Amino acid sequence: MRFLLPLGIFGILVALLAIGLTMDPKKVPSPLIGKPAPEFTLPMLHNQARKFSPEDLRGEVWVLNVWASWCVSCRAEHKVITQLAETGLVKIVGLDYKDDPSDGRRWLDQFGNPYYLSAVDLDGRVGIDWGVYGVPETFIIDKQGQIRHKHIGPVDEQALQEEIVPLIKTLL
Amino acid sequence: MKSLYSLIFLCCTVFPVQAAIEAYQFEDAATEASYKELIKELRCLVCQNQNLADSDADLAKDLRQQTYEMLIQGKSREQIVAYMVQRYGDFVLYRPPVKSSTLMLWAGPFALLLLVLVIVVLRIKKTRSIDAPEENSLNQAKQLLEEGQNNSETDK
Image (cartoon, rainbow over all chains, first blue to last red; front, top):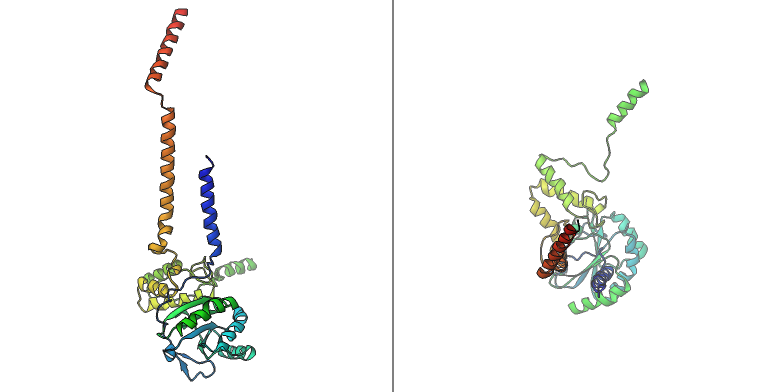
């Protein structure tokens, strides 16, 4: 009987710590979910004279994938993004984040280019507006131009099949 | 002697170098003070246990730059904090606001303290009631004591 209270407290502690273990502190919930995608106008990677703005894709469901040639986990993610592009469901716009455009182009030449187009965010200002803090990051934008989902870190096979593709299908 | 002079000279010219912090120029001390305060209170999202002032991450550098530019543009502290929260959420603040989702965080320790105080008070009351002798047993004890005293006096 006298052990009941400490045992109970211990039990509660274990439960709290167990919940804590299942959570990833690196994944900070974005306040931008359900909000209009931040506007920007940036030069395109393959034709810097032309500009891209999210407004151009209003009325479509699209994906913004933040990548860079210096980003190691972007390489791991690359084949999954290519897989998404091959489904033909949505246009994937790349945001080449704080990267030398020539390095970016070389990277795409080397690994293949799954992007509808890539925009160059040289100084990372657009990244800040989108709340980017860990490349790669992936956003899903709906027909009304609202951000519906944010994936932080490399998208893996499981996240693609269980979260991203089903969500895109409901938005189409 | 010459080497001593050159040593003193060296000590005077070599300043401690802070690699992480850029040297920003401020027009007045008040703006500089609010800059320093802001970068202390804003969290770097890359190395999450560091603030913008301490972090050497690229993003921290960009956010320091952003903070600096907004201050120069005459933006207030509140505007800059709102700008960061709009993009990165409450997590960017080292002092999270009191809301329903952070209630546990703010009230939790006090609730726990209160609970412990209540338990302690209850325990003390319980032990006191055991220790406190009852009225008649107290009288009985007094009587016995007096008798004992009387006996010892007659023995002498």
